[in-house]
Amino acid sequence: MVGQCGMRTSPERKVLGIPTQDFIDFLIHAKKKGYAGEKEYNIDKITGEKVLSISGYFVSVNSKGYTFSYEDRYSGYFKAPGREIVSLTKIEEIGQPQNIHIPIWTMCYGFHPEDGMQDRFKSDQKMAHEVFTFLKQALSNPDKDRPLRGPKEFENGIWTYNFYPNGYIDGFEGPESISCIDRKRKICGTLFKQHVSGGLIQHKDLEVKLV
Image (cartoon, rainbow, N blue to C red; front, top):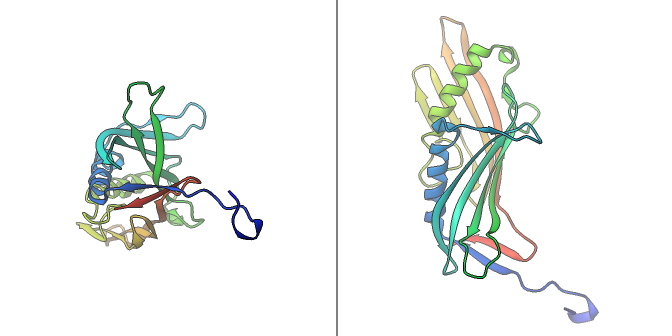
């Protein structure tokens, strides 16, 4: 297509309108069933990453039937960067050769240089186990309006979880942290932290938006 001054312009992108509440409901479902829900991860035979998948949640988009699918993959322990991604899979129709998968949303975590268990605990497997057990408790209680990670604040005994993201589901970033006050072990402060960011995926010929 050629526009004014002879410059080529891109063809108009199609809009894929994702029902906001359906998407929120699926994220909550995936978060509770995934890492927080003790669902088993598989090992990617090529990369060695731990991979978990959840699918089968029906949604109507642009008057057509799709299912949401979710994947979480990460590697490491004391510092374990990873990525979550949500895709739409178009339900197979007569004459359609194969399912069509459209990635629509992603979230990355743990890639900042200072992310993970703090230095003095990076070799303490027992402490890390306690931290990650508590992290699963926090992640099993996602915010009902913005289920990105855990709630803004979550406490259980000596443990405290905080997550203060900027933005909404369509585009966000922010830190999450776990702190502890244990006088017997002389622990007071942050043991674990990581940065989180993500949002809707935009394609060359397809605009993804919440409606």
